[in-house]
Length: 180
Image (cartoon, rainbow, N blue to C red; front, side):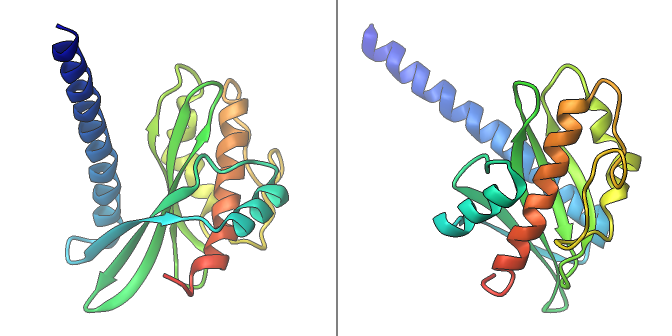
């Protein structure tokens, strides 16, 4: 009986990860196709973060990476690289928020998207209008909430977390763009 329970538990956890992992990947690729059109080639990979680089960026932004890796999407058209998208998570009040930053090849932000928002409150950060304020920013830009970035009443923690997460990815993009 214990063996059957163990098998059921392992199967349930594996199925959960497959379903929700694919949900995030599919949503990301849908966003990329909407942004760039259907006639693109999309490849993605897990990218392990160099420990020293990770630590340096975390210290600059004062926010830790969610994990020791991120996901990278490369967008190509006619055998030419068009954009790079980086996906990471940040903590909201208690749960992770999965977000995507699409970069132009020069390192400026083309667009940002919230892929999965899990909190009960603060969902206004998923708004396209709120996310548009990051367009054109890069690692040299300022990200001061209340000045450069709009605050949202009822979403203070999410705004702060996502803003720092996006800024963190601009620094990371500068570090890794030649390696990808």
